[in-house]
Amino acid sequence: MELNLTPNTILDVQLGYAKRVLSLLPTVYGANPKACVVTFGCQQNVSDSERLKGMLFEMGYTLIDDIDNADFIIFKTCAVREHAEDRVFGNIGMTKQIKKDRPNTIVAVCGCMSQQEHIAEKIRKSYPYVDFVLGTHVEHRLPEFIYKRLSGGKRVFELSMEDNTVIEDVPVKRDGKFKGWLPIMYGCNNFCTYCIVPYVRGRERSREPEKIIAEARQMIKDGYKDITLLGQNVNSYGKGCSHGVNFAKLLRMINDIEGEFVIRFMTSHPKDCTIELLDTIKECKKVTRHLHLPFQSGSSRILKLMNRYYDREQYLELIKNAKERIPDVDLTSDIIVGFPGETYEDFKETLSLVNEVKFASLFTFIYSKRKGTPAATMDDPISRVEKGRWFSELLKVQEKVAEENIQKFIGKTFRVLCDAVSERDGYMQGHTQGTAVIEFKGDKSMLGEFVNIKVEAYDNGLLGKII
Ligand code: SAH
Ligand code: SF4
Ligand code: F3S
Image 1 (tube, rainbow, N blue to C red):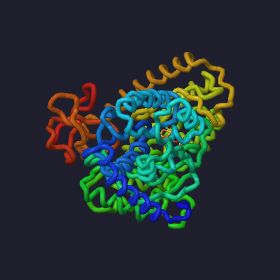
Image 2 (image 1 turned 90 degrees about the vertical axis):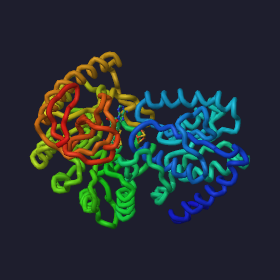
Image 3 (image 1 turned 180 degrees about the vertical axis):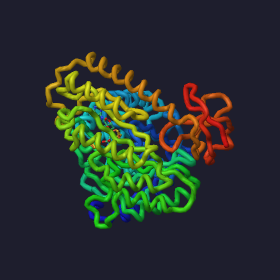
């Protein structure tokens, strides 16, 4: 029935359930019911979890980090690699004892992993103490599921993806006080042949620009100084929408909001990284000089098999344009080692690209076979051990590149948001205009403040002085 409701009514229905849960909880758990959200995976998941926490807070739960004392436990899972899924199963297993000790505890599994039928089936059969398995499109219905379960309802397995609208105005409880995530779109249409994300997150859905701007304004009003715009492919923001705002325009709109703050974004797909976007980054002073442009492989042959829509030459051309237009840009990337059919010759092209581009940092992964993706059926003759050797070789090359790269910051001055306490005694830390961490003398009172820092030396990290 609810499929015919508008997004706002859908949320209203859920807020209605939240109120009912609020009055029901003390009768089951006493005065102070507690909930714990355990998050795996990428920033999108972290951001989604902040909305789960917002809902749980509305329902009257106190949010805690310790699952042993929680009356409601929810695992927000990731399916991107096998290792991520193994970790989740290990954690779910731990709740068996908790349920034995306190049978009223509700255990839920949601996120990308639970969207997969075979995972839901495995939980149904082998993990009887899990109460809910929720796919990525129904998380906003948490109040309804909790209410029904507390009222004696059955276990819930809800993986429907029919409702492709973005549910707006879900209450949010952010983890940070001055650094915050701001989702601008959900899902992915790219279907890279190795990747599970499009299957578990569904098609691309962009939020309305007005909603994003309103949320950004609210965040700035609430004291946020560092806002990261999130999406699986942020630069396809607005495609297929009637409002005509693309990602570059959206960046300008956020940049125009008054106040001193920093705008970051991730992730960008090289195929959609336009000259308009590069110029926008250059012209918008609040946007960090950072481009995360995953290239995955330096071999055009492998890129084609990966369905990435660009080849080595096009990627290098894009990097050339980025460096020309934004001379102080920091480039970072993701790389997959050992894609099915990759040879050592192909891999050497990845190494040479890393040497050529000089990335500030890299996220490197050994290929992990994902059930249901096209790559899972491709021939994969290279052993895991061999792939491991290539992987170490790549890390060594990048280590050298990063070491050379970091020297360029010495002597330069940056406007830095003091965003964390450094591990170095008596030091605080922040970032350059891009991604590099700078440490400087200071104390906790500086957290969330902007300071001008001159970088003076490199000693296992950039060291600077407030000027
Ligand atoms: N949407 C983002 C990436 C999300 S997943 C983008 O396209 O840039 C983050 C990274 O995980 C990917 O860039 C890729 O490098 C890696 N990855 C995805 N699927 C993988 C797999 N099956 N095995 C190994 N690494 C994978
Ligand atoms: Fe996965 Fe490719 Fe989509 Fe990124 S762009 S989420 S790697 S399918
Ligand atoms: Fe993992 Fe889903 Fe993110 S699969 S990487 S949590 S989009």
